[in-house]
Image (cartoon, rainbow, N blue to C red):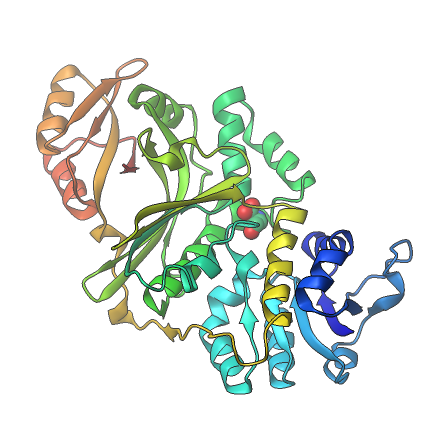
Length: 405
Ligand code: HSE
């Protein structure tokens, strides 16, 4: 029997127990032995749950039990999740996690420690919920140079944006629905302000380029300012407003940002709705590949946690190659202003102003909206150049959005 422990019995933790129970036959067959949850660490008791008797409140019970070979951490938050992860790796136990905050903040150090200890630290569920994206980037795309990664990385905000667009729903109401469905973070500010997506794009950037950026320092804008005007512009241009995490290399430096984008209808991400995530990886040999699926939710996310458990338990120790990440220094990081893209600026003014803005932005498109509002889409240029061009006209945009083609 292979003994494992679950840390945190919330949405994903209890989902992991459910996946292990529901698919027990095939899971045991895959691992060549019976997989058993020996302990569940949580502050609460779960007397009604079939595994309620396995609940412990002291991490040392798990750390001190040599039978436990693997710990699945689904506590959320940085502490004590990071501290327990370190302690478990130090104790020679494999760790799998869905905790993007810990991976994005401490991933470089934890991967190094795991490698030194000859154990695994896997985090498939930390990005894209149930979508296999981490393992394909590490293994199947190892023959490629990754050029860029762009994606809808937060299920909650995509759910909100879709409902706002299709049903004219109110922001607060849809957020409550996303919370009830178990999509949103304990503190949904991390979803709506873009921090959750920032953590995820930082993880994808590290997988692509080997540098772990600080998720709190990349340019991050959420969806709280998105309203009817944004949707109206998107409709006129045949695009969708989506919260996008994007990373690419600029020379030797890594650019990563999170922002609402206008996604052109030609880009498959434009059509990724509801709680689904869509991650477009551009690689030098493969070209573009889209990874699509449920980006949040109990069982999809738990299925990714269990995939990591199976990956580890079905191999001999030491067979799994872990990535090496270096914490990024100031000189490794490119500014969001350097992103070359088309940019859409929205103004209020006369037809003459529209001509002026179009000329300054060497614009390809100009559409007129309700009242005297209009939108101009620039040719491809850096954000810095686009802003400078608009500034030189003396026009003040109401807002602007980068375009993802
Ligand atoms: N709150 C996250 C989301 C959960 O909505 O995408 C999955 O990481």
